[in-house]
Amino acid sequence: MNAIRLKINEIFYSLQGEGANAGMPAIFIRFAGCNLKCDFCDTRHEDYKMYSIEEVIKKIKVFDCKNIIWTGGEPTLQLTDEVLIHFKEYYHCIETNGTNKVPSLINYVVCSPKVKRNLLTNFKNGVNELRYPIKEGDILPCISKIPQAKHYYISPIDANRRNINYCIKLIKENPQWKLSLQMHKILKIR
Image 1 (cartoon, rainbow, N blue to C red):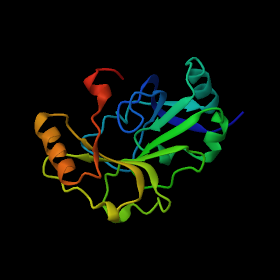
Image 2: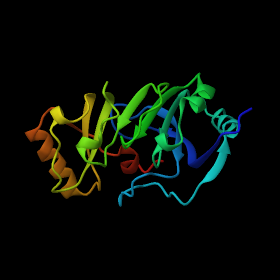
Image 3: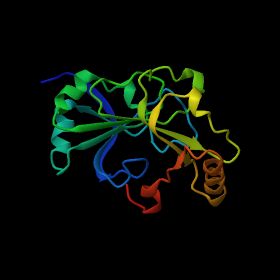
Image 4: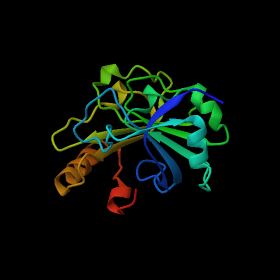
């Protein structure tokens, strides 16, 4: 069918744990590999399997769900419209660091930037959701200087009380932002 091979860390079915779609059932396809080296990344990039598109389709067909969250790592290093065309019957969400263009067949874009604001040039038409990872002492970006989004979230990098309190303080000072906790970690689900 297709010679494309994808480096995938894991495929699983769960609930979206953060952002505007929190609680939504979804099939998570987590790519291995990233162009950044964030010390708080929860993907084990060295653990992966090479999948053909046919193998991915076979693996996800067992789930009674039509939502896919393409995540990573950085999915835009491998995910293209040429891949997505094989998954036409699904609703596609992507979680990206914002350093590369997102395929046009994606339905919902979450940009979680880990780079300087002036490098976020791939979103001239905006995104659905901007979710900034924040730790105590980080400076919140000015909304007028980042890509336009329907939802602006800050998410504590570590869900310790100090980071959460710091994020709450930032939101109270900047009410256009909302808090996004990683519910899946709190509930101890994948």
